[in-house]
Amino acid sequence: MAKRNPAEPTEAEDAGLILFPKAQKLFEEAMAIEAVDAQEAGSIGYMARALVQATIPHRDPGKTVPAWGRHNGDLSLVIRPGYTVNKKNEPVSLGYPYGTVPRLLLAWLSTEAVRTRERKVVLGETLSGFMRELGMEPTGGRNGSITRLREQMKRLFASSISINYATRDAWADAGFRISDKATIWWDPVAPEQAGLWQSSVVLSEQFFKEVVEHPVPIDLRALKVLRQSPLALDIYSWLTYRMFYLRRPTQVPWESLMMQFGSDYAEVRMFKRRFLEALKQVTVVYPCLVEPEKAGLKLAPSKTHVRKITGGGKPALDL
Image (cartoon, rainbow, N blue to C red; front, side, top):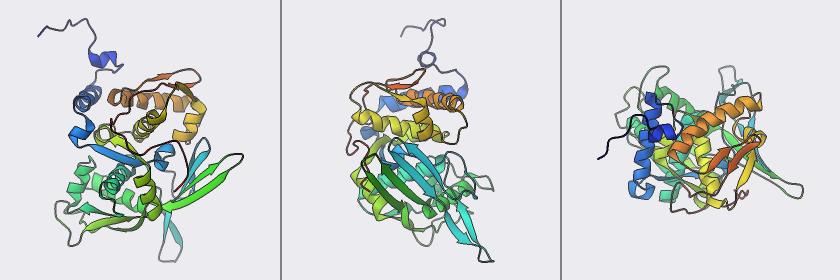
């Protein structure tokens, strides 16, 4: 084998990565994904199309915000938190699902729904086993991963989502919850111990229908590699979806991308900087044809990240 000239750039450097440990690890994991097809690796997963077109918050909007939304062309998403009552019978918000954890949960639930064609999804015998399926390592304590997972599960399953589609000539609206029923029996103090009863989620009929009729295929290995950034997870799923039906080069304005992915940024330039940082990670894992331009992001037809695609299609509202 010929020795590499130290003066020549490595593949990682050609990809635009600064060679610090995290970047090197990202590149190595991306090469491992590229070496084995998703179907052969058993890593084909799915996301609900509606939650790829418009996504949940990256950061916590706070418990005093009554509703939160995103806008993508003619489609908008609004999410409202669930509520409980305190000892004074006053309504108390449970908060919004946000960050990477609910995204990993949604991908896992959607994949199971497509695989089993059943609304009831069994989460597994142990908490630690389920967390490892999500790509999370169980850690205890107030700020540990177990606490974060349980809190985000509670927020996600209690919240309500509405999708609105409006043009000059048409209007449609659909509302749903992710689940009709969620029962979590795991003991957070003993994550390796099986519960007395099975922890499970019964997906709502509307969400289940959207997932099984319009699944967006993804590579679950990519989600695990990109799981440190909710923005990177959203961009990856969106690019996979867009490349499924993109037939000619198109430019998406930065203002439109900010409304879709970064409605909580104060200025376009701040969003653009964050978006490009996340995009660089995504295109290492999924090297599709995208090019940042002054006015927006140019997309050119590329092969999808998962070769065998089922479902998908152009944006629509038929939940």
